[in-house]
Image 1 (cartoon, rainbow, N blue to C red):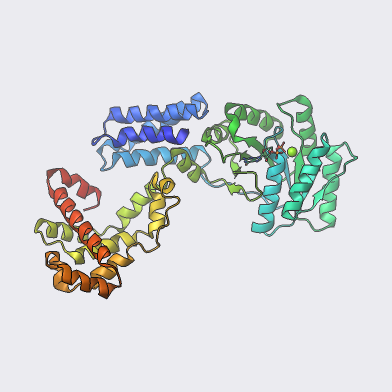
Image 2 (tube, rainbow, N blue to C red; image 1 turned 90 degrees about the horizontal axis):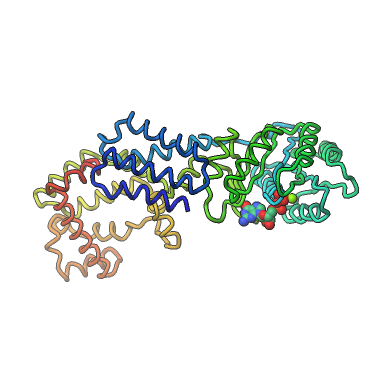
Amino acid sequence: NLSDKLDKAFHILKGHGKITEVNVAETLKEVRRALLDADVNFKIAKDFTTKVKEKAIGQDVLTTLQPGQLLVKLVKDELTELMGGDVAGINLSGNPTVILMAGLQGSGKTTFSGKLANYLLTKKNKKPLLVACDIYRPAAIQQLYVVGDSIGVEVYSEPENKNPVEIAQNAIKHAKANGFNVVIVDTAGRLAVDAEMMDEIERVHKAIQPQETLFVVDAMTGQDAVNTAKTFNERLNFDGVILTKLDGDTRGGAAISIKSVVNKPIKFVGTGEKMDAIDVFYPIRMAERILGMGDVVSLVERAQEQFDEEEARKIQKKIAKNEFGFDDFLSQIQQVKKMGNMKDLVGMIPGASKAMKDVEIEDDAFKHIEAIIHSMTPIERSKPALIDVKRKARIAKGSGTKIEQVNQLMKQFDQMSKMMKMMQGPGGKNLMKMMGG
Ligand code: GDP
Ligand code: MG
C-alpha cells in the first residue's frame, strides 16, 4: 500500500549518510510513484513533488544538519496542505440544522447518516432526526430504522409517499414542531451517476436549503471517486466530503485527489460498519497515516527543545575523561523523561507504534532504574567498577528490585558507556551533534 511505498522512498534517504541532490530527486520520484499507485491523479502527484522540491531547494535542505528529517517534514506539511490544512468543522448553526447526504448507492450514506446522528447526539449534545428519502427500495427505509433503533434516534419516513422533496420538507416541519435541532436527510443513490438521480437530489437540495450538503464517497473506488465528486459538486456545490470505508487497506489517494479537484474539505471519515466508526478528518493525521511515519517530526522537535546543551557538554567532557558514572546516567534519564511519557514517545517513532501495538508499556519505564541508582552510594555511582556481588545484593534489597535487574542495569550502563566512547571518535562527532551536543 501507499504507506509501505513511501516507507521505501524514505528508506533511500536513510541509507545514505550524506544526502545529495540526486538522493532528494530519487526520493521524490519514489514519493510520486507511491502517490500514483494510490490513485492520486497524475498531475496532482507531479505538482506535489515539484512543489516539495522547490521548497527543499529554497530551504537549502542539503546544508542542514538533518536533511532527511527536513525533507520528511516538507513532504508531510505539503501533503497536509494538499488535504486542506486545517480541520473543517461542521456548520450546526441552523434551527434546525439541515444536513443532506448525497452520493452513489453503496457509498455509505445510510450508515454515515446514523454515525453522524450518533456523533451529534453523544458528542455535541444535539437532538437529531433521521429522514428516509430513499423511496425506491422499501429495504432502504427499513435499514434506516435499524440504524436509528441502534443509536436511539428517531426516524421520519412516509412509506406511501413517492416524492422525496415533500418528505424532506415535512420532516423539517416535524423537527421544528418536536424540538429536533438537527435533521439528517438520507437520500437514494444509483450505482453510477445518472440523470434522474442528479435531478432528484438537486430538487431536494433546492427545496430544503441545507446548511450542510455532504458528499459521501467510498474511499476504495479510487479515481472513480474523483469523477463522481466532480459531477456531484457541479450540481450541488456541496459543502464537504465524507470518505467512507477507510478501515481496510489505506487508500489515502482518494482524499488527496478529491480535495484538489473539487476544492472542498473532507469533514469526516468512516472507518467501519459500526455506529461509532466515525472520525473527524484531520489533514495532518491523514498525511502522517499516508506517510506511515508516526509523529516523527514532533519527536525530533521535542528532543531538540528539551535537550540541555550545557548538560550535554558536561557529559561529553566526562566521557572523554572516562568519568561517566551513574549520576550522569540518572541525569540522562531525567532528560529523556522531560520529553514525555514512554507511551507517547513510542507512538511517535515511525513503525514502532505499529510494531509495539500489543506491548504493554509502563508509564514510568524508568522507575526501577531510578530506584536502583538511588540505592547506590555516591562512590558506587561515580566508580561503577566497585560494585561487586555483595554490593549488588545490598542495592537490590534497598531498591526493592531483584539482583537480576541490578545486573541488567549494570550491563546496559556498560554498553552505553562503550557506545558513548565510540561516539567521541572521529565518526561519532556528527552523531553527538545530531543529539544537540
Ligand atoms: P448507501 O447505499 O450509500 O446508503 O450505503 P450503506 O450505508 O447502505 O452502506 C453500504 C455498505 O457499506 C454497507 O454494507 C455498510 O455496512 C458498508 N459501510 C458503510 N460505511 C462503511 C465503513 O466506513 N467501513 C466499512 N467497512 N463498511 C462500511
Ligand atoms: Mg442507503
